Image (cartoon, rainbow, N blue to C red; front, side, top):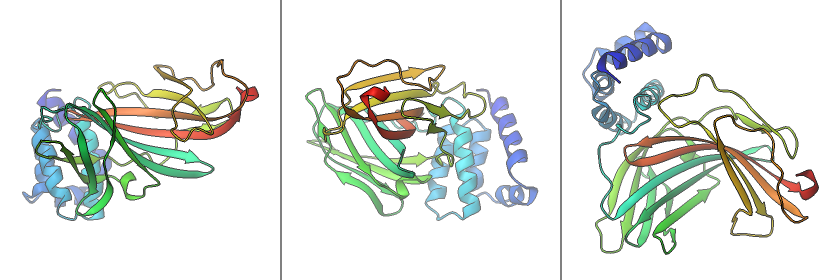
Length: 287
């Protein structure tokens, strides 16, 4: 995106979202808050990201938090977040992803956080901390023979919030990898809901974001008695999202069905996925 296009987009967003007195208070001083806006106007996305990180470290007010969230959302529209952070992953860490999921089950929405990746070294610990010192996750991930690792935590509260987090990954024989992570505000409204055991509704959410991948619908069926939660059947669909299950060849029985909408973006080399999912038990005859 050209500097002129970024500037036009920012000016339109400012005029639409913020009152004149709020704008004035943001652009009169040369603090890190206004610096974040200025750098994005100049097309310096990674410098804008650095300013946002510093701003979150200064205990921003509610208005400032709203501004920072809107600024991050706008910065992502440049190239889906690939330019946000220029810091490269260490050589021993080949991929890294953060998945924030809102699971609706029995009229409750339960946040879940998952961190995944691949590494040439054994990962000994992962810490995910909401700034300044609120632990969200701290444990040793499961790792398979291919170097793929995964760790998750359920029933969260603060991990669903927007704001600043620090991630620390430790591995055998390597210096710990530390990085800042900025999460956007999750959707306040659940876009997907049950119609019956085989069908669901999906609310459309405005125009598609052309710089990010299309949303993906993930459908998974699990054995109710399998505590490992390994899917017996799974299918991911992008483009036109279905609202009903296809015919599935499974033995008679009672299963657990999960259906979720996945939105993907990046923070530099880190893949970030936001998921809204619904779950329920189903009988084979219902499928």
